[in-house]
Length: 113
Figure (cartoon, rainbow, N blue to C red):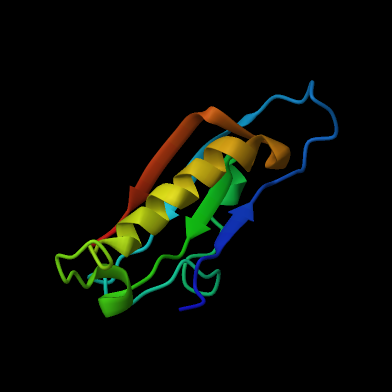
């Protein structure tokens, strides 16, 4: 499934390393692990970007592609949760390029998020 994307919304890309880094909010969408998306038409940045933060919304595999477990080494399950962990690792490694502080990250969501 081609869904492993994330969106980064920032009020301003830093011009130098002296720019102060902003707090980061990572939104994990809900949907019972079977539907939903972190796309902007559903969870856009309009409100939070006015709070001078960097907002990240993520997508992860859903349904059987994300959570089917055959209890085997080849298909242990929970790939959707592993996608979320990978997105958080990406944030830690890259968010400063977008003006975000990797030491000040808050994860939030609703329902399954």
